[in-house]
Amino acid sequence: MIVVSANAQNSAKVQEIVIDGVAGFQDTPMQPDGKWHVHDPARPQPPVVTPGEFSQNAQPPSDAVVLFDGKDLSHWRDRDGNPPPWKIEDGVMISQKTDIVTTNQFGDIQLHLEFREPNSNDREGQGRGNSGIFLMGKYEIQVLDCYKNKTYADGTTGAIYGQHPPLANACRPPNEWQTYDIIFSVPHFDTGGKLLSPGYATVTFNGVVVQNHQAIRGNTSWRSPGSYTPVGPAGPIALQYHNNSVSFRNIWVRPIPAVNQP
Image 1 (tube, rainbow, N blue to C red):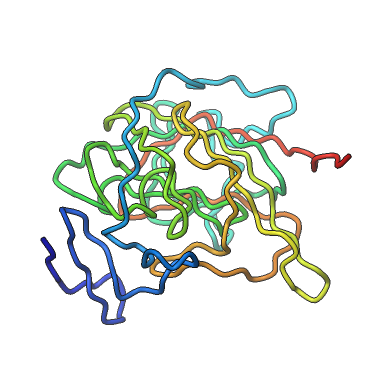
Image 2: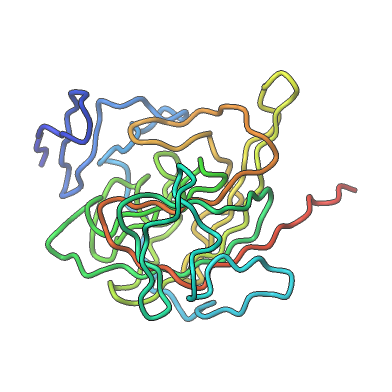
């Protein structure tokens, strides 16, 4: 069944369609493989995997930079450099009003983060528990409540947003803590700004690998397949506020050296 409706997420005239209960778009550009539109509701859903126990309350290694330990937001600002408006309750920070970014910048990293989705069963699709982790402030790993909640595959939890669906849906129910363990390698450019190698992300979600050294196609954004703009060797980590109060805790990061080639 296909249902067509108007979408008012921005001023452009777009057509949201629903296929088999999944809302998305087919008036968007094609992905580079030519099989699916960006945010295509016909793209297959990731298989559901029930996660085991993995890395909750993981203690940061001795060389980690602890970005949030439940006490304060001193490592964070909003995107304009102002004090972050997010609140802290019971050792947890809760998203509100705007995105926040780290005061420090990072290159290749190992990142640990725990999040908890609110109970928002009155919403569906992208409206349920939406947030995101932006590596270098540009490349989003999607945060969403996809527990028994369908949305376009390249926007599900663990997706490289708008580009690569996760290999599995390992979501826990709302109000349960969930974990991301991410290894990220930055993209590289020559002195003229030409891309030499893309960024790569390996994402483990609740103990399940959902991105396996996956190349990132560039900046992630709504209704776009992604493209690169030249960046330096480091950038901030950003957490998104997207009209949902998502909770976060135990965030730490380890800068990691480049792999030694033989």
